Length: 217
Image 1 (cartoon, rainbow, N blue to C red):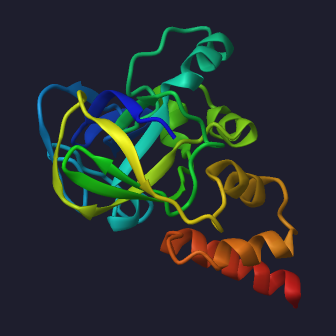
Image 2 (cartoon, one colour):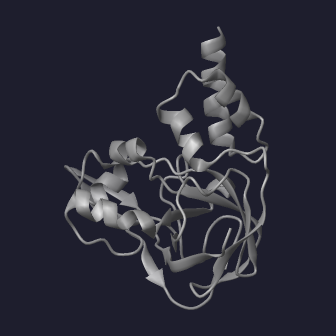
């Protein structure tokens, strides 16, 4: 795999925004930052999550989304999208979910990161882009993006690139993981394959484990 270009590093602290009649706290409206940014095992410096029950944590320290999907969404949503539009920390170019595998290890600047799971879009993305059905549309297309855990902390800039340094040849792609999660929900062999991956995030391990138990009983 060739090095993956980084178009932008995007961060945000939680801000109030309106959803219907409610005021919510979220950091989904991320903005690009210039220069070097320190990446810890929790997040990029200057980035936070409002709801730690569903966002953030070591398995979801960095959210990544491919700019290759932007033209599709601009056509569907009939609007121009700026980098960070999907609430991602890294906007990258030249890859899709078919190219990235659970457990892939990348050099990112002087940091080292590992793929843990697909991104699971929530209603806050729908609110940000004013498209109520967007989370379901993202699931249907499989254009979800994915998460990194941080194996080695360090400084990162948008002038760096993602360099693949390790891949488990027995692993599965982000695209296949999405298919199992949202479409092929009774594929026992597929779920067992997912559960064999030690690199899979705790959340997705629990999801597939529970689903497998239900199907087997």
